[in-house]
Image (cartoon, rainbow, N blue to C red):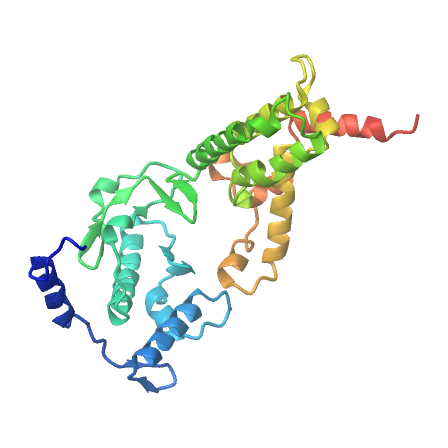
Amino acid sequence: MEKISPFHTAYYQMARALRMDTTTHTPPLSRPDGSIDFEDEEKAECFADSVAALCSPSSQPTDPLHIKLVEDENGVKLALFADDTALYSKGNSLPHIRNKIQKSVNYLGAWFKKWRIDVNPEKSSAVCFEYKRSRLTTTPPIRMLGTPVPWQTKAKYLGVALDAMLTFELHIKKVTRTARFYMGRLNSMLDRQSKTSLHNKRTLYKVCIRPIMTYVAPIFAHAKPKVINELQIVQYLFCRRVTNSPYYVRNADLHRDLELPTIQQFLKSLSERFFKASESHPNDLIRETDDYAAPIHTPYSVRRPRNSLSDPPNKLLADLNCLLAAQAKPT
C-alpha cells in the first residue's frame, strides 16, 4: 500500500464506488394483522416472522393464506425445512399431477418475488416416483420463474438420495461408502494393534460410524435384504477389525461378545420408536407418514416403511437370538 501514490487509479475507483448509491429499497410490507412496516428493521422482523411461521412444525400455521395458495385444494403438499422446500402430490396420471404441481409452483414463485427471495431453478429437480418406468419424454417439464425444471430419475432432499423407484440403493451405496471412509480415518484407534479397549472401540463405532449408515433409517428399513446387507457388511468389517478374530469365528459370536445388535435389529428398533412418536406429533406431515396400513405378502417393489416392523429375522439375527437364549439358560 505504501508504494501506491495518491494519484493512482485505485483511489479514484474506490472513491467512485463509495459515492454510488446501489442500495435497493424494498416497498412497505404488510403483516397478517393488517399493519404495515416501513422501516428496514421492521421489514426484517416481518420477513423473519413469515419464514419462522412457514418452517414451524405447528399444526396451525400462522400464514394460512400462503399455505392454502400453494397447496390449493388439489392435493399438493408443501414440506418446508430450513431453506429446503418440497412440493409433492400423488395420482394416477402424470400429466394431471404435473398440472397440479405447476399451479402450486406459480403461487410459490409469486411468494418468492414478494419477499425478494432469489431462487435458482437450475438447482431444482422434478422426479416421478412410481413402480414402473414412465415415459417422461412426452410430459412437458415444470416451469419455475420461467425456467424449465427437467424431469430426472433421482433427487437429493435433506441428505437422502431418492431414486425414481424408491429402492434406496443409491442412498445406501452413498452412506456405505462414507462409513467406510470414516472407518479408515479412525483405523489407528480401531485397528487390531491399537491399545484402545473394546468398549471404547465399540463406542466410537456407535457414535461416529453407525449414525452415518442409519440416518433416516425408518424411511429405508423396508428395502430389499440384499440392499440392507451392504450396511451389515460394514459392521462385519468393524467387528473383525477390532477383535482380530480368525476367519472361522462366526459373525453371530462376534455380535454377542461385543454386545452389538445386528443392522436389521437396530433398524427395526429405530422404526418402532419413530412410528410410535409420529402418532402424536404436532406436524401434520409427520402424522400422515403413520396413517396407513402396511400391505401384507407383497413384493419388495411395493412395500411400505411399516413392513419393516413385521419382517422375520434373517439368519444372522436368528443365530444371535439362539446364542443369547442359550447363554441365558441356567447351567
